Length: 453
Image (cartoon, rainbow, N blue to C red):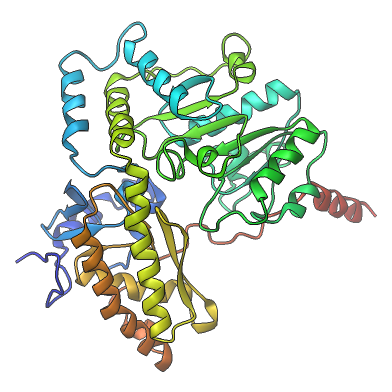
């Protein structure tokens, strides 16, 4: 019998997952199209590897085991799986066509909605993935300023200009690597030390898992204005989730360009670039950013239905309320149990559970938590990604599960047996090292001078 949402007697049987995994071996690199969905991010031998269906906030794997999902497609499923209003919009459009030989009216209708809701969204462009629009934003910034160098903070996709700052940088020319540098979030001095008249743009996630301090975002904006640098907000996680108008609305700081994808179409593939018309209008003649599927109508129909539902039902407020219960509940239990080495942090609508290396290997501690939550019917990879379908019962059950699982982790840490209690291989890091992060142009210039001398 398949496991369900309860403290199951056994860990789930995952024979179907393992069979598909075996078929994918040597066929699909890394087994997944999205790194965060890869089997490497789950306890191998315990966690499911393939999901077959979802409804609301619950998913079922290929073996029939049911889970409350706190990944929600790694962010895009903002209302819930098989959300009736969105699915109906998709079905209605499917009967009329998917892609056409000329623009579809939905391209205009959704753009008008975006302009109405998102601050500074004077013009709008569509694509399919987040990396598409962050890369287009960087290209626009370079064209607008006549400069080449980029300063970034956060994760911005797989394209050359960004991924060169990580350890997965093979296949990227050296001259491309020399055009992108990073700065530290909430450290305005790290940006001030790097920014100058050679910088085309500053692109950052306006909030990741740490709230901006000391008016950080406004200080970033001020520095950009002082040097004539284009400010780009990568709002993949904050757009339509933190607030309907994203981080710009929530924090009251406007960017020149904004990039969206997750949450806007409840799982359908759509990304959006918006911003000031004097920059965006370069796409008319000077900057090439065109895709065959940019105006694909099913995703636009889903986006229109999703945005209207979010607006009419004040979905961001609901996400914050439910997410706050999880964030605060986890921390309250950890404090009660005397576990200072783990905490939940971030914004209410999306928080991260972290583990301090002072208590042991963080990945092994995370793996033990994941293993025990999976036995209780919770699919978890360290985050609370809350949807409009996460009910009060889901939240209450999850908090009760934390109350059962955290003592297991505490006892394993105190006895030094975390690794021994894992019934499979622990999760792996997304990037094997981050030693290239937070480099500054001024620092690299000094290194080059030292090498010459």
